[in-house]
Amino acid sequence: MTIYNIKGTNGSGKSYAVMAIMGAYGVVESVEVTRPDRKAPTVIGYSCKDGDLQNLFVLGQYKTTCGGCDGFSWRGSYLWIFERIREYNRIYGNVIYEGMTLSGDRNWISGLSYEGLGVEAIYLETTLEDCHIAVNLRRAEKGKEPLEDFSRVDCKYKTVERGKPILTEREVPWVLKTRDTIVPYILEKLSE
Image 1 (cartoon, one colour):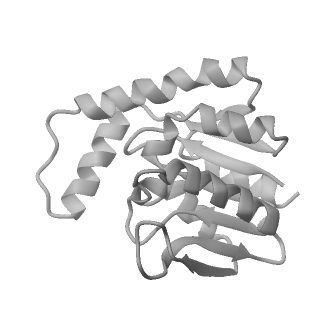
Image 2 (cartoon, rainbow, N blue to C red; image 1 turned 135 degrees about the vertical axis):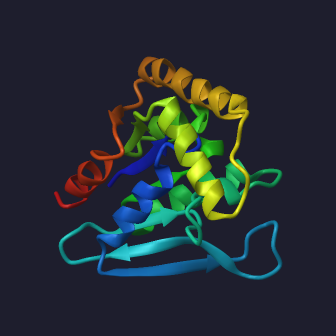
């Protein structure tokens, strides 16, 4: 029973990895609840079941190529997100979550670890140049002009990178994977 947090900057491949993992499951059902910022139920994640893989809950929305928990942004959203992570960890055993806003987090994931929950941060080893290319490919798919100023992406990249020594110091397990190795790595863990 593990809580996986995929970390990386914009365009690093976080959502791609999660969608590929969901694609390996035979049954994927959306889960709707009424969020604090909404009046009606909305999709907050996906229940994934398969005879060969352990049950999994994916927290986040994946209607577009940019997915994850970034759509959960309101006052108090971090508390709500981590309550859902705990809740679905109890129900499903395994949880995956990602999002740019959560990639720089060190405190909430440390808290889960201190509570004795099985936690693993998985950092995507994607070059800034590849992230820039991916961001502009995504923009082109949406009919938007290419981004010329990547200073925000670069700043987020540095924020994500600063988390590694902090998690090491706090004894929160983390690994480094590439776009090519992350999906097989997680699927292997889910097949044990």
